[in-house]
Image 1 (cartoon, helix red, strand yellow):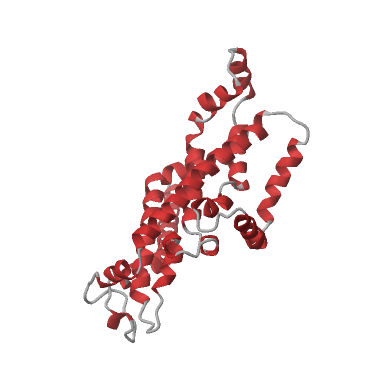
Image 2: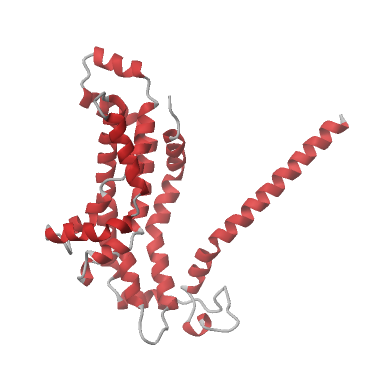
Length: 281
């Protein structure tokens, strides 16, 4: 009896220690964001004070007003929303149809084609940056939303996730649907898509966040200030006097709002989608 009580007590202590360690690691990861938030409400003299302080002595919205007066941050956020939202929807469509073909169609070279598709993951995006720009420039799509979205419309990892999810469906379900006269398109839209909501949500949200945070490609294919995305627009806050820490931190907090809101709303869907995409029949 004493041994069981002692064992239970050791397990409880172990759980408490693990939770304390997890909280500590979480705070370390979140500390830069928390510090960024505090700095965005500081006055310039406190930001540059030595020794540095973490919590503002006097809270102010001066940095946020500075951002809105210096740059068209609203237009930048609209550009980023269009880029991230539309390209994520297109990526969702292409990944779904490609995964459906790789999962339910039998054709010669299917596995080879799928391996080639996965092989593109190993190619760094910087390697094809110049080639992509030459293509977009040749099509006269510089300074257009289509030009910015073009490289984000297809992603091999999203195809892989959707394929793994579709492979978890029983073949008997597909055969029964075909016996009842269900066509491929109807089977796709009426059966597969409604039951794949977690994975679809995961693909969309992960695509949205990654595209929202992209910097290099939108900067490369746009040279008009009003076509800039929000990540590129933040760099416009740099000036000669160097007193930009507060405004940049304020702009960074504004940039974080959409992605954090989406993640908090759909976090359960994201976790279940990742788990579902990892399963295979």
